[in-house]
Image (cartoon, rainbow, N blue to C red; front, side, top):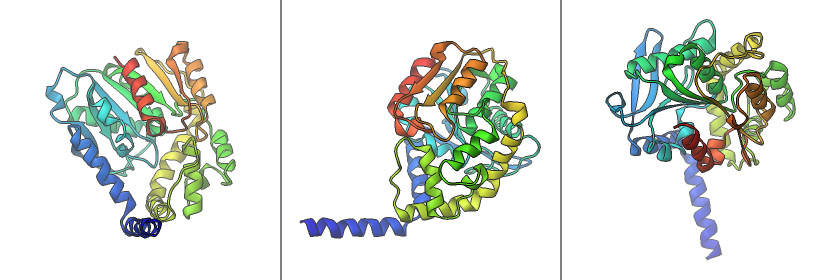
Length: 313
């Protein structure tokens, strides 16, 4: 029996190694979205496609509040697949791919944050969403929704900045984090040339060391290297504008919450505390999730979902 298990394990590993891991994950996320009533929507602008997963016929549904879930750099809307089963029961969902990611255009000009805000605004218009929406943004996406809420308060019902550098984050902090795992600086960290360098980036995202097979790391690294120029362009633009954002105090008329993984090593908890303090948020609007790193919605999905359901009413 032991020998049979070893043989079967080898067969499974060989089959997985032969498939494209990134495509497999994309198909899995698509099945989850579709099973929970979301559909693909693509709107073509002068700069190319703007993609979003959205609850079917949401523009005609006034019974449920609407919730926007925004991913960070190097990710896509697929990162929310672990959450839509629960959240779709309470909200109509909008899950976009940001510019430079997934199925959306890679074209942008000027300030990348403002370009992403305009991208989201176009999706709202195209989906005929007129009422204010709950917004959650992770990592880079947290900076995007923070600025969207300030620029479009009439479209924002409440805001959740989730491990996102809306303020209190600088290139010096980013470079220090990168050096902690052996990278030269943040640009080097986000330019992994091989599986080992890909792993060191992942190690900063998760609370516990991730267990990723070597063949999967190679495929994930191949995909990231193909997209690195776009990712780095967006990241550099944000960090080069730290004078505009690092000490920014926002004008938000809506309720604002800061949600952070206790063990986030990529964007430390000190940044989340700084955002809450700088913007004088109530003490209970800073929510710290234990045993979670930079992506609590993946590591602690039920805890994360429960917090959203509690605060976004």
